[in-house]
Image 1 (cartoon, chains in turn red, purple):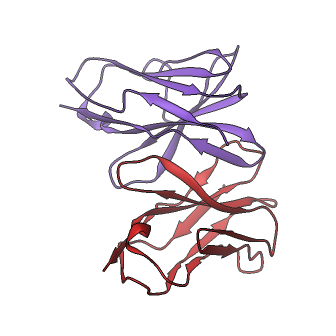
Image 2: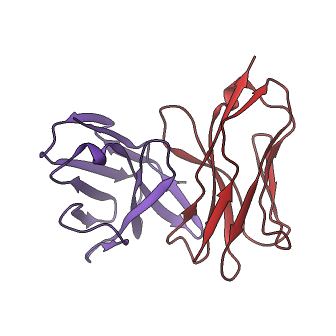
Length: 112
Length: 113
């Protein structure tokens, strides 16, 4: 079956530090890959996505590249802000938009 | 993207009672999904709700415990029945509006005492 593995948090960074949250996956076929973000007290929001190998998703300064050879979709941001403090979920969908598989979530805390 | 609202946003309930959660979408969608997010955990799909047919439940979830209605293309309800403290979670509905992307509601935070 499908699975998503992401680094466990929490991750604590100082403002303007570089962020990497690792995500690897196991799936049949050619899944679409997503990063969702959950700010404190809110629901999930789609942050970015990539639908095929070598695609790069980007949004709000965050980037992730679909690496089929390493089955990875690591999330990066060059300079984090306090407002980026949230839980980040890596996810995949291997067939339309049914049965999205989520990783466990990585809590990011950015301190001033 | 779809705009999704849920009611209630949070509730505190006594064990043995039931709570119905409503999910409203601002556009017609074919597929709606209900997820549970237990404290410190990731999201687990409870069921898929299609208009005009019975919901499809994932392994470990049954209709008697989580009955779902889907009366039209913009609305769905999830009932958490005969609640116990283990049902304390965030319950989220989501919709699949475009291929390969799901949009989520803000969630309903449930605490069962």
